[in-house]
Length: 550
Image 1 (tube, one colour):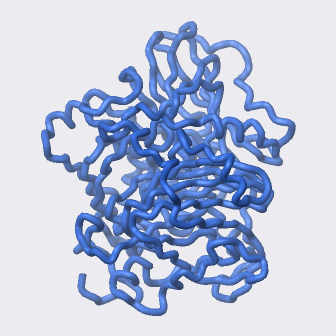
Image 2 (spheres, rainbow, N blue to C red):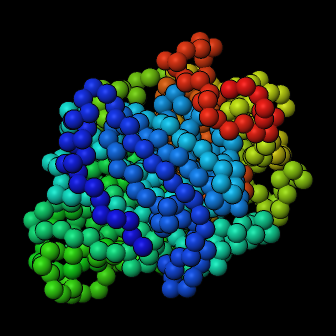
Image 3 (cartoon, rainbow, N blue to C red):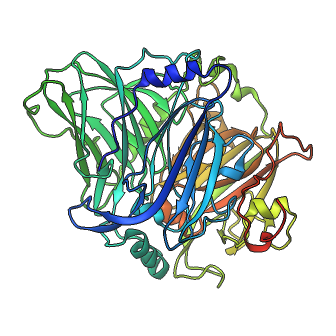
């Protein structure tokens, strides 16, 4: 079932204006349950929020305060994370296992309180524990600009949200797929691709001559997707909360965990046109989901076949996708969520304080602590999720939870593989270079909570220092999730201006489940609310922190 129609864009702006100087509060109460869903025509056990699959969409404005009470009626612990929301000074609300104790099952509850501080754009939320997101529990989170802050395009006639992702036909997807991973360390190929919870994807209605904003997020477990609209050009206007140069494309790749938005002008004859999403780089059959762009008053479908996927010499031809990624450029003159232009921050002229080279790998386990026939690792270390969240252990100075600075900052083939709970300590306001090295034959996708970063380069083979000569130090695209092509590397620069405990993880969810993640602790000894908020009074305390005072 598709989400309800979007709230009128102008109404949100009016509400923001009426709020005056105070940042408004928006309150939500969500009950998480199991329930029957039929996206593929047969009944599956889904994870619903207030009975909805996908979950309710949040529409809000920059700097709004969101108060979301989550009641967990499942029989398992549960958490939600807010993909791309920076949680300024507030990693307490990030909703991952390293920052939060799980919401207890069978009626437990937790109230998230966070602000969409200095952000606009297209985001989403999803369950962060186990493989719950394989059964639902995800939804859109759209942040609109304040009236005083212009965006670099005229107000669209409307906007549409597309949650696109791979899907499995298992009777209980989260439980069945988890058993598969625990037993074999691998997932089978997905069975379908969904748009807003259905392979048919629903209908988006617009008037001829109007221009509409399409917001797309890849909420699936692992598959990259390509999105295109029959007979229409896509003008890219947002990438994960930042404004790019507005290039025009026939189609756009969106990798696991990524979001973007594009404008479409309805300038064709008044007919129904196919909105197509298809999987990328799959050795077996390409999966396709099709929605409809309906011109008001249209009575027939546009003739001709569905628009084709990008050209490729084979299922593992990444050249087209790589060239498109390199074409994304940061719009230097556009304002973001604040009045100053994005380009006023000259990231390319800032010296880096350190370099992290992080290589992903997958292999049989080397430690009984991680178990199973296959694990993933970063620089040879498979992450073990502790019973006590890292943020609590750090706050209360609890020993024997965190492996401080044990992760090699560069791959070391002589060090061997191992398991642990690595946290890298970095200083507040450091400026860091991170290189993601992919020595495997499958595409990787990496996400960093709490931040945007500049994707300054993509390359083939092994990265080395000479590759810096190829970096884009002027207008590299800023985003929070970056793809790394097989047997290649992607380099980012990140300004560590947000204190907290932040998860750096694979956005390909089976790899995250199999331990491809770590945490960054960004900190300064100067304790101040201007740097970080205190532990919430309603924080759930568990593990070695159970029973301690807030």
